[in-house]
Structure formats: structure tokens, C-alpha cells
Image (cartoon, rainbow, N blue to C red; front, side, top):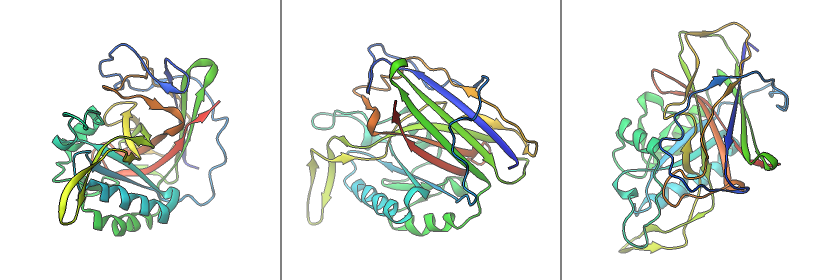
Length: 296
């Protein structure tokens, strides 16, 4: 193994299983990694054969009548490709804005809005696959073929994540280990860590062929991006090359993790930690992994 880096992230939270807070927090996820001493205990052995994984960013919105088709397609692809495919639903744009009943819940995040504008999302639903080709967007019918194509690539990086909710400390502890599988030259890399959540029951506008769209009041939203933990584009982990064996640990301090926006209460058992390594200059994602939070 050419190179290993371990990242250690800890969050103070207010309540046991549901993350809640009373005070409004300004830009709570902009903190960059700070070195701390740690080891890599707790990680299983990296498989001998590391497979390439893919991040599919589904740019969606609760008032987008066709966006449920993107969610259904993503579910089908997850069934086909398994853990090699990681999906996040990024709610953004005017169709994701809140309004009168029933669309009063705010799914949007500052980071999702920045990505929406940066990648110039033309319509919804749109997908970005590993942010290749400058973050080229694809229609729903193009997702499967392009995901499958990326999965055939030989990975340059392996990733592992441990995500533990520590009951006695009321804190979420995340460790990320980065394995460089080949020597990387002239690459500036970032590590981005975010939280996604399943099983959010909130209204969704749904189109019906030949009829007016309807409000599906008990629609179950999955893979919803809730917050980026360490900044919109992540934190720096590599400058120029990875050719010397090395082990580092980082702590990302945050204030109380509860309020990430109006009416956003995260249920720990429904959350996943998603981590990906990307090229700082091109935004291309080299590897991604996700892990459900373990309650301890």
C-alpha cells in the first residue's frame, strides 16, 4: 500500500438519537481538518481486490413533478450495482423552495445550492456521475450506462469509513481511512464528508400521464443530502503526489450538530455518512464510500 491517511471527525450533539438544537448556527460545517494524534484501530483489512465505486448526485426537488422518476431509477440502480453505487439526493433550485402547504419543509442545503449553481444544472431531475467531464449532467435514462462505464475503471484509491454514535458522549465519531493504491503525481485532492438520510416522509409533487400532477403527501424521500460536514468542497488531504508511506489523523470541530436548517431533525438510525475523494482542480471524484451510523 503506497499511502494511508486517517481522518477523525467528532461532533457534539444535543440529544441521543435525534439530532436537535435550539440556537441557530451560522455556517456550521465550514471547519477544516485539524491534525490530532490517533491510530487506525477498528478498521477491517482492506480487501485485496478494491473495486471502483460511483457517486450519483441526483439533483431533485419536492415541487418537481418528474423527480420521483429519478428516485425510482436510483433505487433500481442500487439494486443492480449494490454498494458500489452511492446516491445522494440534492434538493436545490426554485422547485425545492418552500411555499404554502403542503410544501413547507426545507430540504435545501447551502452546499447543494452552491453545487447546483457551479455545475449549472439545466433541469430536474438531472444526474452527475463522479463529477466527470467537469460535472456533466445526464438525464435519467442515461444514468445506468454511464454508471456502469465508470464501474469498469481501475480504482486509484480505496476508502473506508467508521461512523459511530457514542451514546455516553452524545457525539458522532467518524473515521475515514484513505488508501492510495498507486502513486499519484501532480494531483491535489480533497476529502468531502457529508450526511445523507433515508425514510423522510414529506410531500412530493408527482406527475400522472394525461392528468394534473398530484401532491403525494406521504412520499418517502431517500438518500437526501442533509449537510456537508467539512466545507462545500471538502478539506485538503494531498498536494501534488502520494508516493511516501504516511499516516495522518484530523479532527473537524463543529458546534452543536442539530439545526442544519428550518425544521430539519436528523434521525441517527436513518442516516449514512458519505465520504469521497475528489480532484481539487477538476472536481472529478476518484472514490466514494458510505456507511450507516452505528449506535453504541
